[in-house]
Amino acid sequence: MDRRHFLSVTSLMGAGWVLSPEINRDHYEDSKSGYSLPERAQKLLDAASKPAIKQDVLPLNPVILESVELLKHGRQFLVRVRNNEGAEGIAVSNHLILRYSQSLFVETIAPFFESTDARLVEKTIDDLYRSSYLTPSTYKWQGIQFWSCIASIELAILDLLGKLVEKNITHILGNGRIQEEIGVYRASGNRGNAPEEEVDFFREQVEAIGAKAIKYRLGARMHYTDDSTKRDRALIPLMRESFPDLTLYSDANGSYDIQTAIEMGRLQEEYEYAFFEEPCPFDHYDETRKVTKALDMIVAGGEQEFSMRQFIWQMDHNVIDLVQPDIFYFGGLSRSIRIARAAESIGMTCTPHISGAGLGFLYAVLMAACIPNAGPYHEYKGVDQDLPAESPGISFIPQNGIIRVPSEAGIGVQIDPDFVSAAQHIVK
Ligand SMILES: [Mg+2]
Image (tube, rainbow, N blue to C red; front, side, top):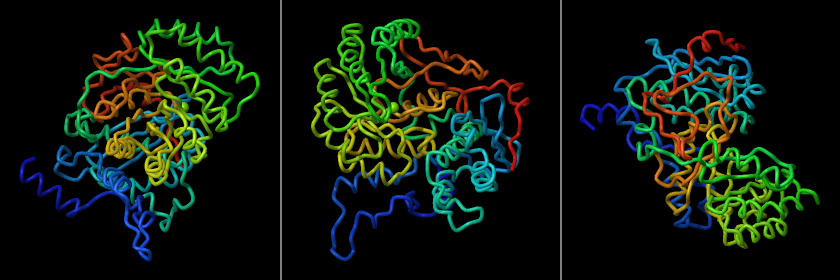
């Protein structure tokens, strides 16, 4: 970093500036008893407190956001940010959430970002989290809807910043661009079909993209039935017999109690599965922890977690073995990378979760490209046919189970300008 830039950034950020008002050390330290922060928790907190955006790569001058817009075209939601010189960044949001969260977005969250410096987006997000005393207030709005709105804006801001410095965002985030190609696993959204039908589905999908790994669903989602258990007991061995060379993952979406989760986990261990996702209801930390302790195989989770504190607590207390922050539900790439860093500090792998279709799979590819503890395969569920987007030189259909990491400036994706200009503006 040249000295002029260094001085500019340090004066801007303030000496010793770290993120973390959201991670309050008082929760770990008891000043009355003198209890001190255990080493493991300290490591997690330190790693999660550091900004994920590399300040030395950003523009020297402030990037003041003049507008933060929510656009809708068909079922797709886009977020467009512009600075006071007319440069813009764009993101494809999570339409499954934004269709219900539009008012929250335009009335409360977007105005908070207007007139802020885009370079300080991580600090702005921290400020927003604590802004319950402001009007409009964000008090008691914490949750997946709230953080998905913030993530959509953060992704558009990262696109803007990358374009301004003519770099892909992988050069701005985390450890910088450390991978050019990302392996994907094909995930199934099916549940309740016959085991043989699920095998047929995967034969076609594996063939289409050359996948080396797959993930399918177990249980009945947040509960199980006699029928779902019968299917699970048949499917676990059948998938291994049908795909002897593939890496197999399963996802119970919180279906099981402790005893059933352990039974299903033991069966997966017998057939050499690589991870077991959300065996118990996602917010039953103690149940999940007992399953994780009982099993030898890796238990994955975190896709529905939106609290930095809770995520750190889960890691600190061995609730899960592998972390899966959802880039939308958890509030964006920078927060998700901070979780990946915390995981790295204690030797855990991170496999970000994606939601909402759109470009979710590509945002996960970008994140995996700039963290050192990314898992070997990342989620892929196909592309939205109603979203005219492309990335020069990149196929959105994986080849040989791999997606190349976009390299153009910003997010590295171009959305058809006609599609954007024909979109409806969502206003208060
Ligand atoms: Mg899942």
